[in-house]
Image 1: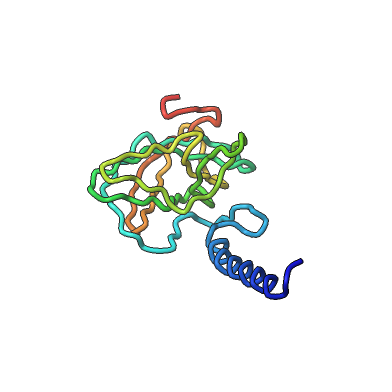
Image 2: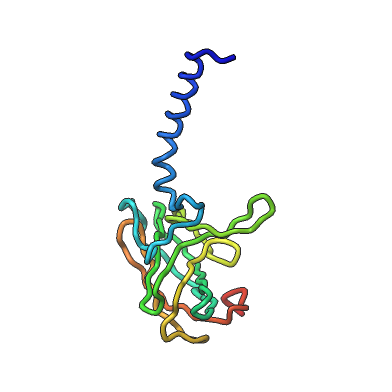
Length: 177
């Protein structure tokens, strides 16, 4: 059997582990049900992390769904500077809510999760594409297939980049579809 001293040490260890884990859970972007906690827009950053600002934005396109189903937006970023860039969100007057996401596979199951930022490496590039990073766009306003919609991409240091993105069919698989 366990002595009182061993039980006390075990309890203290568990409480210590819980105290360490609690702040991580509180800042993970998830509520207690395990569902992603979504903010009205995804341009909030916990810190103003230094970021490259000279990014080339290309092949910006979206799968436009109806109001009951979120749309998705994809884009290519190329960083021409010697330091990383950190994309933290997007905004558009044509969508009520936007969220930065990534698709992932875990234990043979596909899923999506909110991510606070995406790093574009120094002198590197990242492609947002189906099955990877993307923006979820909710509640479109005055948008139809074929429209070129202005978007503003937000970096961790507060810098903004603008681009027009073409909205396509929900069945589209790439910028060239």
